[in-house]
Length: 294
Image (cartoon, rainbow, N blue to C red; front, top):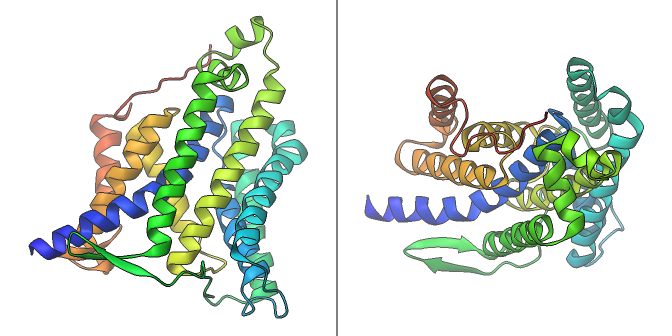
């Protein structure tokens, strides 16, 4: 029993860092523009597939670039795709919540169908190319899991410094707190929203690759991570970056303990119960809504 609990804790710490990356991008877009971006899952998937196409010969024969190139390309390409999604589609309909929601759903579904057409519906393996594993507290940890944990926290730390310590980043924070106030102080709201989508895309691409290293890539791989991101945002507090991190870790721990003690078939049930509990008794989340439009 103690060994199972130790394994669950270690695995939760590892996977929750990646969950936090995903949830932060999701909540940043909602906090700045009030957009519930259901295409965020498709961006996660794009990061994993771009890496796989460039690095893994089982997806596209003849392409076997170094994993570092795949990671850089995955982050950069998905950031650009996210920005393009905003500039080409979302910016024209974002004032209508329903149309924006439906538009991002259509993008996610269309992305899934495109990948099924190109690669089929099967799950394909992608790897970081580092097969080392080691033990922590009685649990076995794969090298890519440890690297994902470190990289995720480095990215989160850099984002926090950018948002809180630079004028450019503080314009994002100001817009999420009060769009009217930010506009009165000379902030270019359109530019802030574009930057937010760019950053969220980069985080999604990074998170998607590490999810792919763990479970492989498939056209439906985005569904569970998107659900995790949504639940983490609700649990942590809509619009709160630190709340998203806390929510992601809470979900990660609940999931891993459930898998170790009950079984993988019940993985999502306690998380859904947690979501319902917060919606009923604590709808503001752990940290409430830090950012509010006026």
